Image 1 (cartoon, rainbow, N blue to C red):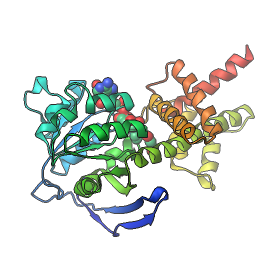
Image 2 (image 1 turned 180 degrees about the vertical axis):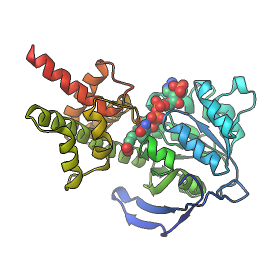
Image 3 (image 1 turned 90 degrees about the horizontal axis):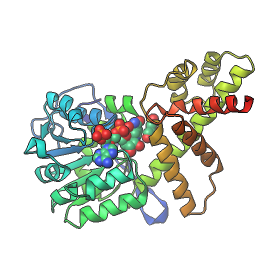
Image 4 (image 1 turned 120 degrees about the horizontal axis):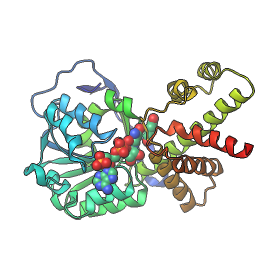
Length: 342
Ligand SMILES: NC(=O)C1=CN([C@@H]2O[C@H](COP(=O)(O)OP(=O)(O)OC[C@H]3O[C@@H](n4cnc5c(N)ncnc54)[C@H](OP(=O)(O)O)[C@@H]3O)[C@@H](O)[C@H]2O)C=CC1
Ligand SMILES: O=CCCC(=O)O
């Protein structure tokens, strides 16, 4: 949608384990690109965006196109340039910009960082966002991290008097470009309500899951399933090839049956051609499996399939495929076949 959106259905409140509540808000997209005058989409105030990688850049871009007042920061400064061309601002003192400066000049600041370490560093490190936070401001971390990191960040942010919301996303590069992400939020509910118009620009639906940690856990569960599904799919493609079946026909058959998933139809044809244009970097998928394994360990839950999948992503990383799309995990299987033949 990348533009104005409107709520079709009211929020639904469902009972959730551990005594918290699940608020589900589904928004429908509007084809209109109009935005209201004040703040573009019904959000009043200045918005910071930290982290302009594969996901952060199109998310910030959609906010700019919807008419929001956006200030950007990225560790590698050159990645700010396309956003500046669209109308984004840098924090004052362009060449000394920092997460702290962005946060201090904005009402709400979003962060889309690679992993727990970078999310913590950008929020809580030297010149980190927390240094620019104060009562009345909000920090929304949309990175995929573990619940412990999210809680640490939340504690540091709220110690300044500001509010904290974790909001990892389901959906990849294309949904980010199209404003069709799914937000898995938890934390301060009034901040959730305040930023809802912004989430609706960047996404097609949003879930409010209660206490900080629940959004992170939900995201890790989803990506644990996804990572295992991809490995299983890769095994199927290689097995079919080995027994003389046409891999493209396998993709087509799967797409028509009960196990159809958009991921198979989307990635299958390029996997057959051994092409892995990066939408979701393999290193991030392995990070998510590692974090899911730790989450499972914390509650003594065996996840043997995910554990086996994780090993394969580790092999893929060791083959130099960390920055390829996660579908390149099929190359680790091919390497295993080759090594078993020698
Ligand atoms: N790609 C996808 O399909 C999806 C990704 N995610 C999650 O979203 C997050 C971002 O993913 P994505 O955009 O793909 O990743 P990218 O690798 O493209 O971008 C990572 C961002 O983090 C920044 N960064 C990394 N390390 C540091 C550091 N030490 N200090 C400051 N900034 C740092 C990078 O800055 P720099 O440009 O300087 O390197 C960049 O802005 C990850 O947590 C990922 O798991 C969630 C859903 C889908
Ligand atoms: O974290 C990445 C998720 C990718 C997807 O949901 O397609």
